[in-house]
Image 1 (cartoon, each protein chain N blue to C red):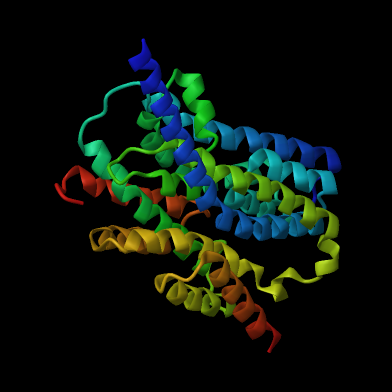
Image 2: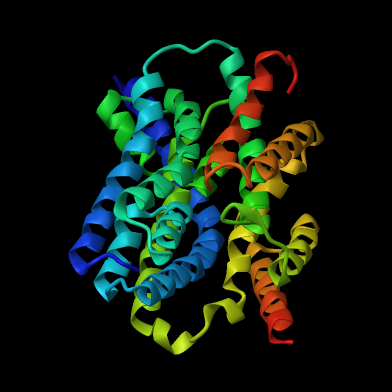
Length: 233
Length: 105
């Protein structure tokens, strides 16, 4: 009995250590996320969203690229179905990411589905242990500060955004690539992963002119299937 | 935008449902079973291919066309700084400053 409770305590300690490590990793991404979410709110208000609508979008979607994809459709005069399809396609990479994450999540189907909601690009990539499994507590920790700043950034943009004026001139569109680049460069430090990164990038670039936004990214995930045949990725 | 106030709320609700369902798909369909050894190798390769696709599309794609401009220069400089292990916040600040600076010229 004592052995078991000590074992459980040890496990709880591990979870807490992972969670706190995740929190620390998530803070810089959270700071950048604040600016991204702020710029989304400003663009949403310019498109005709109310202050509350801009904030609620960020708070309940919490999906940067899907939010921007949806907004670009309605800003250009598109309807609800087209905007939902754009958001879904941009978000479709989470189909592949969810499959990868699935074995690392405990519990029944509903519980696993609920836990997967706490995955975002950064926390998913950072929680990967490098052996095909994911540290879910590190993932929760990395996501939390980003959710807080994503929501507060949306509030700041929706309330004070008018004072910013022309966002294009501010260069805020350079934030998104750098955000993803920091995660990519961490992967590229392992030379064995460079060919698959290059192949994914080239495939995506080739598909940009011929498929809707988001599809090139999902298609790039198919490159990972070379892991089926190669012994040492 | 041609949507009414109520339609925007409908869009927001619909988009939230879509994103939640997409994130739920993998864990609901695949979880709770033992997966073959090749699964781990595929997962390991997924991050670099997905992340590189995200970087190139967010840098070079404007809708369905390819676009190069001030932001490309800002991102390229940030890439060098990131490779030299400078902090993300600094790199983002430099990329934004260069992009804004070039556009102000």
